[in-house]
Image (cartoon, rainbow, N blue to C red; front, side):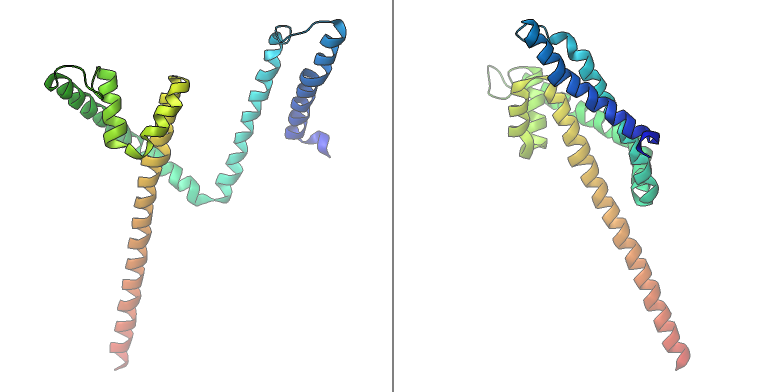
Length: 195
């Protein structure tokens, strides 16, 4: 039954806390004459319980068992993580050196190289990732922390995974080519033996 399922109980407690926070406590405050959100600000602790729902990601383990190819890809990511990290370090060193060169060569104010952070940002966004420059700048205008988040997302989703996809496709095509080559060799050998 459902009361034996821990995830069901966990979801029930979360829904109960949300209903309590959203409707019941609000009605109690309104009935008591307290208005405004300052009275409700102390209830943010209840919102933290909602974050625990992220633990449901552990259900991904079931998916891993059902899709061994995904597990192999994740193992490949882990195995390549040192090389990828060194690549990112080299990338940032290169950006820093060229930003420094641009700052030293260009005298006076420029559009892209007024300061070292601006020069590095311009080289990264306008030279390396021009397709994403407008989006990154728009997101960063809202909060500077989003710059780190959006660039980490682009780095993982766009650069790392897409290059890994290319590598996987090359490996698959190579494996198919070897299989086909072996098949052709077997057919050729069979026809030679028959004649």
